[in-house]
Length: 68
Image 1: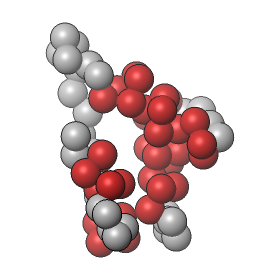
Image 2 (image 1 turned 45 degrees about the horizontal axis):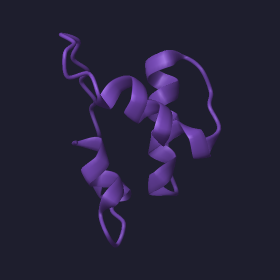
Image 3 (image 1 turned 90 degrees about the horizontal axis):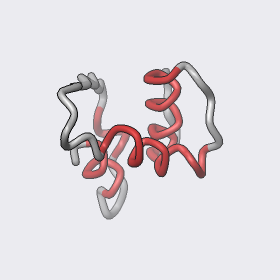
Image 4 (image 1 turned 90 degrees about the vertical axis):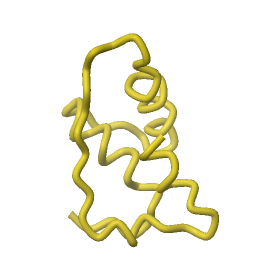
């Protein structure tokens, strides 16, 4: 899988986790609501990223959000 824009990682992750396609502008919000706020859950998700440098942006916001 090749990602040409770092922000496209959000819809790709959501697709891999749920099996559903979501509009690019909603994917980050849905990931945040469904997976990033699992503070009381015992579920754990392992995401393997290769060529992580493809996710770098000037402010590194995409990379920080993934490891949040």
